[in-house]
Length: 170
Ligand SMILES: [Zn+2]
Ligand SMILES: [Zn+2]
Ligand SMILES: [Zn+2]
Image (cartoon, rainbow, N blue to C red; front, side):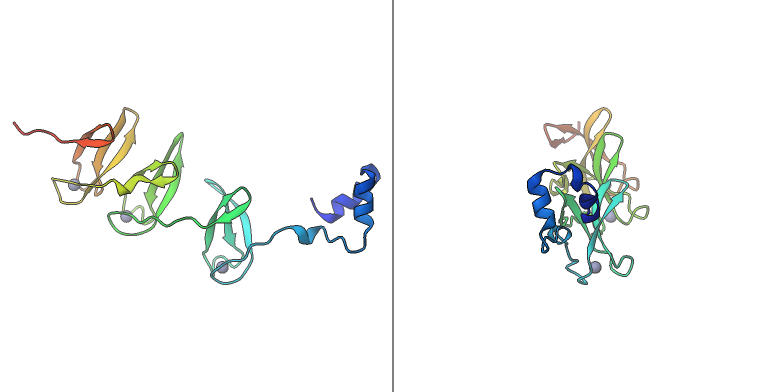
């Protein structure tokens, strides 16, 4: 609420509120915490993105600093890198599914399962077909392991309690 709005409502405010507002040095708006961009010192502004509110630099697009919004405070998102091409991963939401997608999309189509707000790309297993990695993914039929270079490599393995179930050669 701005100071103007508060003044408008003083007739309905309680006594202590009126007393407080009538103090000459009551700078209500200055109590609002302002956050500065650690990159360029401009102010951070709360923005509404496709995946919810986030903090962005006022100097955007000159400065592309962004931070997550946690309880009204900017919290710098930890950077997670794509296990295939090392570009940052971005958290995405599709329907009820949260996952991490490579920021070089569509050049790199890597997606990684979300594990409590963290990409579970730390769990990597070598792909026996191409030598890259397998990552745990979620489909409507449950979890499975797919190659990080999908669709180039379509190697998949079933998931067995969080681990890829290796196919036995007969
Ligand atoms: Zn900035
Ligand atoms: Zn990538
Ligand atoms: Zn592969």
